[in-house]
Length: 69
Image (cartoon, rainbow, N blue to C red; front, side, top):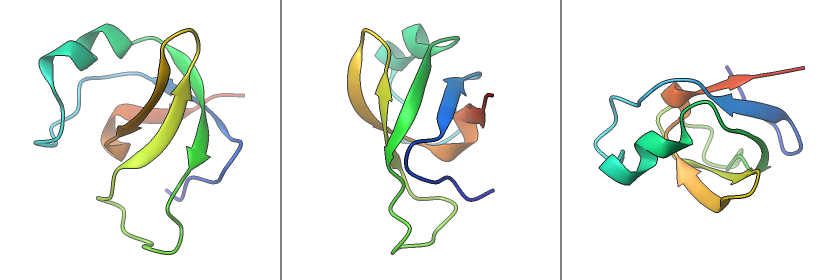
């Protein structure tokens, strides 16, 4: 799946990526928006920047994110 800037997302599960840190467990269930999908890299394993409601902006692995409407 290719994420695009401005899409609404939910952190719906813990990532299997080594970049996942224990403090990120509190992000599960939080909604946010894609702010920088790094489309130039076009790598499905690359971290993407998301702004999480009330929590700030983070670079997260893609396998923990899903689009919401």
